[in-house]
Amino acid sequence: MDRAPTDTDCISDIPRSDPFALFDEWFGRAQESEPNDPNAMALATATTDGLPSVRMVLLKGHGPHEALGGGFTFFTNASSRKGGEIRANRQASLLFHWKSLRRQIRIEGPLAEVSAARADDYFHSRPRDSQIGSAASDQSRPLDRRQDYLDRCEAIAAEFPEGDIPRPPHWTGFTMTPVRIEFWLDRPGRLHDRRLFTRLGEDAGGGWEDTLLYP
Image (cartoon, rainbow, N blue to C red; front, side, top):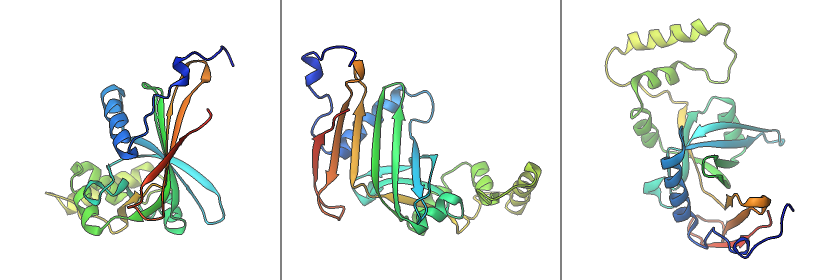
């Protein structure tokens, strides 16, 4: 340890609270301070034989109730590598890291696919160019020439010259129902502050217990 702990170090700045309310507070601060994509999160998945992979996705809905997302929601091409891994192994984890705030949040739990209606609503809320790009992409598959992809985009734009692009059936969303949420706060001398919330029971209606963790 670089120095002796002070009285201030002995007090946690991560309150015993509802973890969704605490997430809202931290996320709100990130939206004010982060220069780009405060909703960016690392999504870790694994194959059925335990081979992990991780990539960045964007949070597009969150909250404890179904109307707010029923957890933490993102959208993707389900024919991609991540989509295949999710459908084979629904357990995943998320990580938010906000460098400007020196804070991070880790979330673990199972994923469930959103309804077709919800996928439609979000897909058609995106800019038209984003709809075209998603419809044209065979995400994660080999691409001989970038021009091939651009040609597909042009063909779709020509086929649907106005209005929304039909949502491809493989483009969907997933919501994580968290069973563990850990908040991490940087402290001087690497005396970091960590609090773990663990859901009581298996269903989303269960309460939470919490504990501090050694850094």
